[in-house]
Length: 83
Image (cartoon, rainbow, N blue to C red; front, top):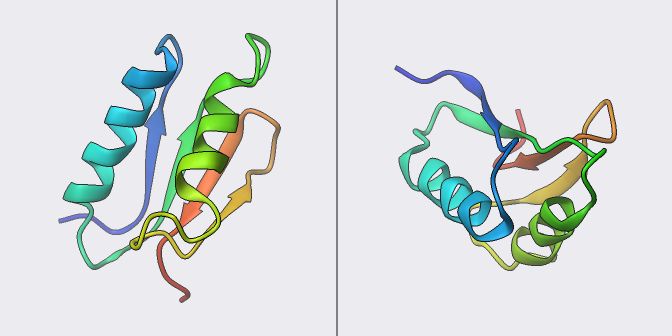
């Protein structure tokens, strides 16, 4: 059973692979999941972070309520529902 927050490590992935992994996790996320924490890093550039903002922000994905920065620059969080 999934609860609360799912963490997804995207280190070492290119943008396309990261996008596919995020969609896979979104499809499998149960009703108890309210947040997906995407760990993408920031020392290697911002390509994955920019893809996350473009692909999942601005209500482009119906399951994602909003996209918020994490507690450090290498993390972005997808909010699926409010608690």
